[in-house]
Length: 105
Image 1 (tube, rainbow, N blue to C red):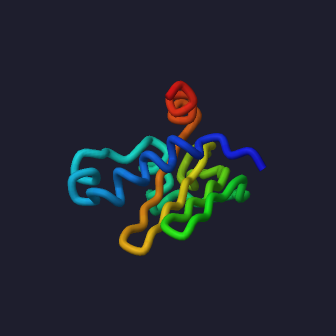
Image 2 (image 1 turned 90 degrees about the vertical axis):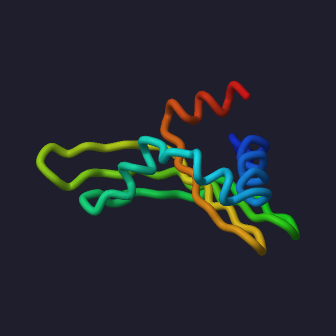
């Protein structure tokens, strides 16, 4: 299975694992993460599209669609990368623009 963002995801994860306080202090949520975190939205579709497992770290990439439930229906698509190690865990949300930026790395 081809994993679109495997190397950039592991690089970002290494930053989170190496210095969780320093990294999280400066990072703002992506548009998709902020949208998915609202109480008025829900994930209406998701599918695991890739996984990286090693003794030290685990990364699961899930394609998803998030929809708003208030007034006019608003929808965003993207991926969520669930990262975990023995000492840290995090989620990264990337919409279409974020995925394009990662592809250019």
